[in-house]
Image (cartoon, rainbow, N blue to C red):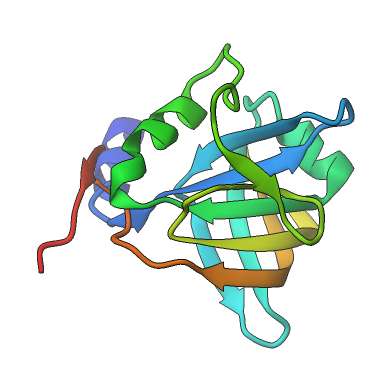
Length: 156
């Protein structure tokens, strides 16, 4: 199968955009943009995210195990781009706070979930992290969407 065609086909599935954040051993927050998120189970409350092996912070998710997910609002496209870029301090100038578990969460998000990794499964060039949600909060707004390799918005 042609990888480009597979990617183009998968791009036809619209997704929300989230930033997954974890505290480093150095006490600093680290994060990356993900659109490979899904809820897995309500009882127990499980979610999954997929993180590429080329991500420099994948090892932090394995070491720390607790992380936060912040679902982005339509007006937070700049945060999505910032956390997708490599080679910079992604948190510089970004408002964030620690959740009840200590995991970093972005301020002014659509919603957020605090999680703890229960299982990591290697799948091709990614690790699928299955995590138990310990808290969740909905703040409201319009979601940032990604479709066909571009940002999209809801029409009401």
